[in-house]
Image (tube, rainbow, N blue to C red; front, side, top):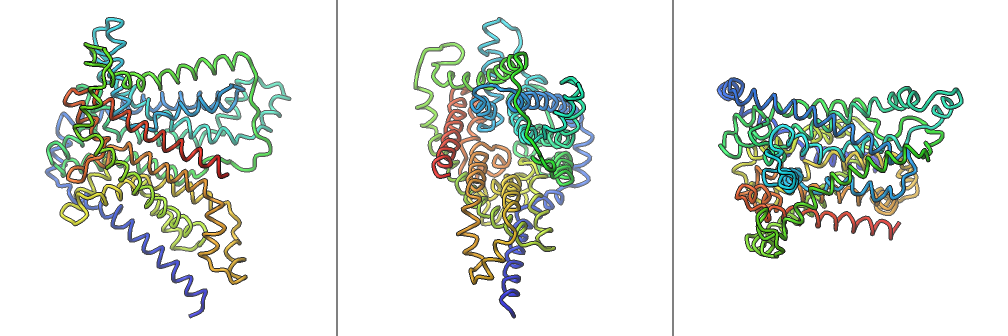
Length: 527
């Protein structure tokens, strides 16, 4: 066997091992969930009036919230990318702040402001709170519009200025240029954003559980069936239904791979100094920042109130009480989970993306498709499938299974990030090195990793931050595993310990801010 053949067989073996990992930790768990569906559970779910109401509520709230999120995201992205606004970095940082806390925390902040005893509700003497349809919509928009903003920003940044300059010479007004040039350019992105946001909202149960009131959604119904009633058969039926929009989003992403660049860009768009556009941008983004910060500030203030909303005197009692009830221990659990998922997930995503982008072949193409499957599986569905598949095994109820489910749940985005980064490197690096007698592994460590270290840090923070704040998959697996701190929010809310729930949300936000800020400073220092 030649050296080349040995290397080829080694790379194939690594690809097969990664494929086996996805088989046991993605495909088989999902198939086991399908296996729990029976004719009785199908009949029980589809014939119940509760299901039809939940389906209607899910579709209507999700559709409305998706359109609002896309509108806010597009206008915010356009104003940041197309106008000469000052403090763009500050605006962008605050806009994406909702991505650092659980969705349930946004709903909790809205309750603090607009609930039956909310600050705004009591100040204006309003009769009813925000619970129900519009509460779910508002909470869903809060945590989903930053995703739309980032997707629109990435594509608007690379729009070619030449067609606009040609249209300007022909005397075509700005509105017609936007409709005739920019909107067609954004067509594929609109589709991708719609399905990405729609999937996020319809599969989330944190917001409707906290602020939905009597308006039940499919995700809450699934949570109640699987966690509350231990009815995995009925929960699996609903889980399969929630897979449908996620699978459609997955197929859309596969069929429309363009994310940032769309062909050759001869000249980037310039920022406009139009006074009206600048004023409108400042007003709009100021309103968005107020909407983002108000719920966060409200639950931060609540932490230090003696008894919300009756006694607003300053106190540290709730911090002490929350810590005495195990918040510190649960926070350490979350940090361990997040760090473990970040280390393992980043390592696996790098190796997998290297195999698929730098060592092409039929196995690489198959592995690439398998690596993207987690994109089509909502966390709530993945969590239930893990309970069904791993219950009774040695890893069930341990730290390991929580770290694994988070690594799988958030795998696709970091994988694609590294895959795209590696694709841009000179494809002949390894061949030149091997011709000089340098082993591939040395090329990887001495050349490739230093070139993609920025992407590696972004991958690590992505895994860490999302693992810190997730409640979807881990809610099914903990306990018996040591509880992550994020699950204490709905536990305290159910016990009407609003101040304690606010403190937990604040803890998660602070840890994620420190992580993001630390990596940003390190990147700035070493680049």
